[in-house]
Image 1 (cartoon, rainbow, N blue to C red):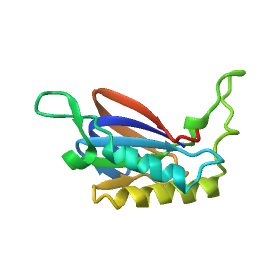
Image 2: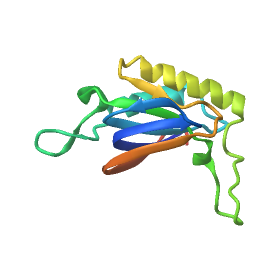
Image 3: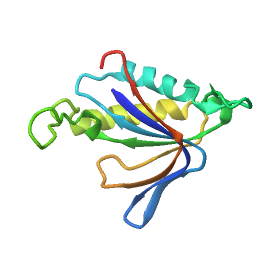
Amino acid sequence: MRVLIQRVTRAEVRIGNNVEGRISAGIVALIGIASGDTSKDADYLADKLIHLRIFSDPQGKMNLSALDTQAGLLLISQFTLYGDCRKGRRPGFDAAAPPEQARKLYQYFVDKVRQSGLVTETGVFQAHMEVELVNDGPVTLLLESPSS
């Protein structure tokens, strides 16, 4: 399982003209699920996401977590995180989980993060979405579960 995170000053996800999720300062997390991933991977990454210290303390050091700052979270499914571009000119997605398996684990991940009490918004699984964000820093990090 992979979660690409970006610290943002604001972000929203739209489907057509409808805003599906919107946050102010916080984290946009793009979530990729591989075929062998389990709830253990989701638990590990949900905990990592809410506790990772990527927000500045009063001295300007990245020393505070989303929980510390009550940051908003925008969680978006992103199977292309498992795109393999090593061969040819078209990515292959064989490592990505099949849609039904990915949907269940994505929803499990969302539910786990929501248990933190942080404002948690989402996109729509398997929908064509437009994500707009202002990357703060910029800070962009890739989190991977131990089994990745």
